[in-house]
Image (cartoon, rainbow, N blue to C red; front, side):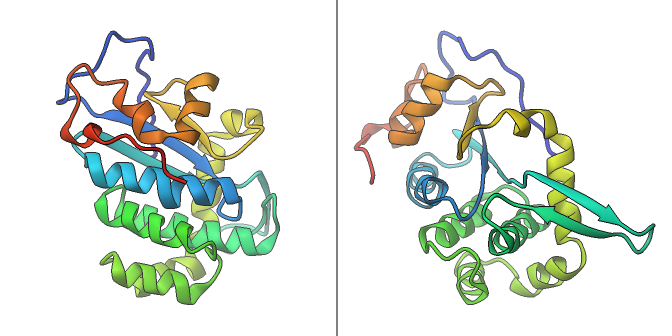
Length: 210
């Protein structure tokens, strides 16, 4: 199951041994989601690493209907920007479901989203190979469990998703703060680094990225 850490945001500071938890709800076709994950988030993760930054990514749909009965249920998935976005979300959801949230999958997400072609299977396959993720497993998942995984994300966070009015939706340590999310969308590394009492080495350089 997907988890969110519910920790009060207004802390005096975090030690370098306590990772900042970041949950990002996004839609793959959204240019701001592509810029954020493909550039800002990915670059910050490369600088800080998993010991300082715990990232969870949730490709998001806005609803669905089901037809038939077990074990032959089919899904009609609703995405903001149509079927291509649903397919792109499905490929990324499969990768994250199969391989977890780690350096390889964050690199994969950074590669796919920075390409600005997340719906292109050739791009996704190339990014999987580059990130040492098994494309054949993702491909199988797309055709078997992809829709189901997207609906599981939606069902778990339905109440939250219904309140989102823009993407990406960025949550730190289980608490959404609009001002902090806005700052993070502009300069993610700097925003994260403000949360540490003792800053990790990756916080030495905090130049904004386009």
